[in-house]
Length: 331
Image (cartoon, rainbow, N blue to C red; front, side, top):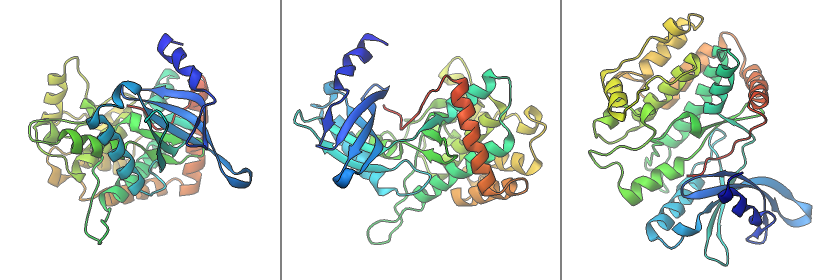
């Protein structure tokens, strides 16, 4: 344990807002820490939650406070089984903000891929397809969001990547950090022409060219994640950012069936279409892409069987990784 992490341990046992007891430091990012916590209510009610706390050095900076508040607001707006849920937003006596979220007991997709690769095994393609269905259904809910008066109010994720895809031990797929992506755009105007947002290897070509992200940009990122899950390695890689950008813009995509001959033609076609350089050549919506993936999966497994098998695979991955757990990622 590093000195910084050790210094945070004094918070163990601390109770926030009179009902959230911090139990264990689960993760630490540049802006925040995430704790596994227990929420207590009336008549002995309790549940496990994740509590995200802004670091002390940022709590006096208005832009960061605004970003944290916006993350909570947008995150609480999205209610779907495949999206990490935001439960509460509170402040303590020291004026620190806390975001209370669903605790996801499992692994992130990046760790899942690494665990299988370390064992020398490819991830069975039905598992990758099942994960893709969950991710895309979560995206569909965000992309189809409606405002208070029923007007379209889509939320674009902008950062669909392995670290933001969480796999629960019961086989449920959760997409995280929707609110953060939207918040960073509002506070820092990161979608202005000429700027980029998101992990480089998963950016859509139009974003690397300085154009604004759209719902179709999220579909490209989802396709890149699917390709990585099947191949066991990132689709776009390079020593320099400029090299990665060049590969993405040129559409240098090795057909997945060449890497994984066992992948059905129908699944390969879904991945290939999602990775089209021109947005208009991709699926028109996350829902349609999810339905196509679900149809491929249905040829070999029922949804219930797929979920059960994914849950077992998550447990195996956790064992291979030494019991690592995952929840919503701190930034």
